[in-house]
Image 1 (spheres, one colour):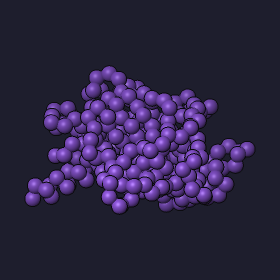
Image 2 (tube, rainbow, N blue to C red; image 1 turned 180 degrees about the horizontal axis):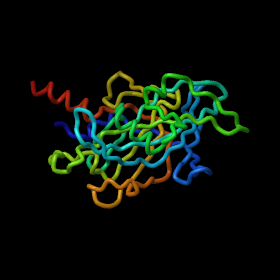
Image 3 (tube, rainbow, N blue to C red; image 1 turned 60 degrees about the vertical axis):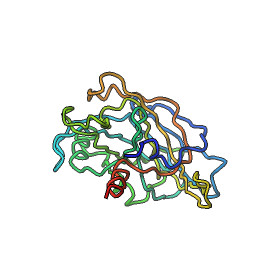
Length: 254
């Protein structure tokens, strides 16, 4: 298999100023404001995002068995002045053993997360597909924000360490990673292809959140995951995931 380092099509080209603050209602929540950029075109808007550090659960998934799942609870606040549609897209990039993982729609895990995070179903937590079904209503600057709550989920590997692939670490064992959050802004730019040809590639305004994980690599204690400041708004291309690369490798073998 080709090196995972080659998975990233294009990385960030610029870092923007950012404002981050703990939520006044919950110290475990962090709010990241949408910040304009000199690279934004006319009419570019962005959402404010509130998030909690990724958490870990063990759950039995249909057809997959007992698995470790990682998830990130988040809220979207629209201060653009009018309803806007979004298309959430989350990529988790491991740095100690480079790999790229896109969030999945895992209904069984989603139900378990709701029971943990919102047992009374007050927040109506949505997965990334359902978040795109309806426009995000605007919040007034002088009123309590109308936050829409969502969750991004990753299957991090078998719960039994003995069943994990010894040749390539599973996501469950990573100690340094970043989560790239795309789709909460309509910002995009066309840049020259790094291959040096005449083609161009599209980069999207994306929020980069960095994390580290302490303790034993087999631990499933969510308290081991810590946010590494600062959050950054960048322009970045979509990357090829582990699954997509494996499919291409299989084609090459054939």
